[in-house]
Length: 234
Image (tube, rainbow, N blue to C red; front, top):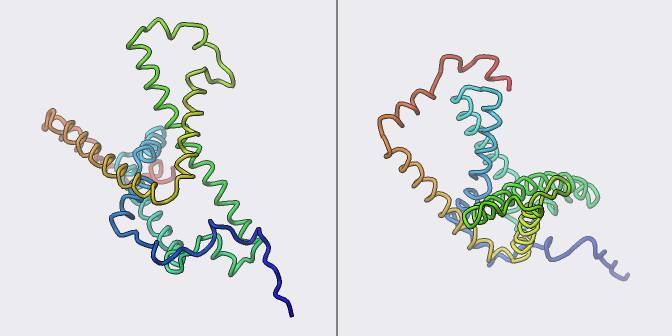
């Protein structure tokens, strides 16, 4: 009896089991990965801005962000535990209970979520590049930004916006194709840089005037309407 040939769509190098020798991420690598993916400045800024738009108590904002982070931590580790143990991607493990087509269906859901997540990151990164370009042009000659080329828009974006978003997509494409060894080094560098930057910024603000800064922080901690319906529901 001849062995049935496997379909090419069932396997590729992104889906095969990881070599145990390559499972060399320690707690420092995982902490840095967590730092740049979940505990991101952009994510916290987005969450905080949404909360403050609804005029929610700052204590609710703090605890909401903390609880949300803990839930992500719990479910991410729960889902990722079998993948980490056997060295198999999450979508491959789904095949054992959902079959090949069922795993593709849930993989599609995860893909859609990823598109939105990376779409937001692409937007924020491209905006950062836009601001840097505008600042550079404005510093050289402020009148240049009044030229017609910078006032012509296509789909709501001018030439600086389009240049920035295309540059961002190219950078992301390079990072996705560079491999995990390169990204592991980049993640460690980025996490250390971000945390050092946040700590430095915190002390710069605090030490500028300790008394005023401390009083401003304490005044934000308003527990008077902590469990009010207008805070909890949103």
